[in-house]
Length: 114
Length: 112
Image 1 (tube, rainbow over the protein chains, first blue to last red):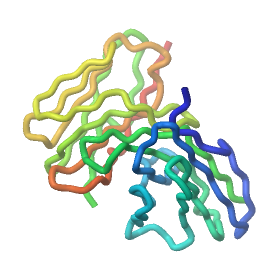
Image 2: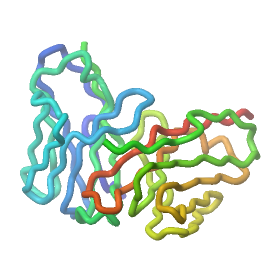
Image 3: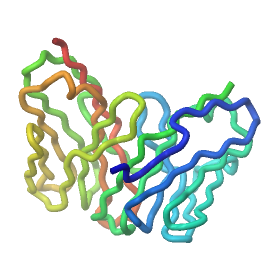
Image 4: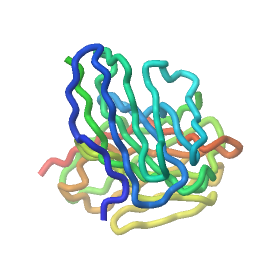
């Protein structure tokens, strides 16, 4: 009954080596979000897709990119990971962008940068 | 950006005790959500509140949307070991966009 699926759950990469994290959803939701969460902090929104429309947060570094090839899948690409990018990356979905619509989170991918 | 102030930051309680935590803001919020996050997992929605004054229960959990739209509380009755985790409040601003603002989190530890 998994609704928001993230792969891999744990990812180790080297400093500067590009990495891609994956998210898929079985809810047929229109909106998919990517959050970064560092230890003991609240999730921080990086960007979201409303259907194919990409919306970047103003303070998201250029090092972070995203792709949404279809409704079900969304990818987070980190072009040149730095030590400061080590974090939990959370994918979330919602049916619309209406602020009464709940966001459902995936289990997250924990990224380690060596 | 807008911050949600959540308190307490951490709680150490004995199994069986009741728990109370709250979230406050200087701005009006249209929705209040309470999530629980366990180590190594994503946040899981516990309760969603959509109307000022709304009081909603989910098992041993009860949450209320403050009348002023600037606060919310979450109560857990008769705590059990599996209640351990970090509890986040979150909300959408009244005239804001789809962005969900998160509180700073309350870390709950249960002492057997």
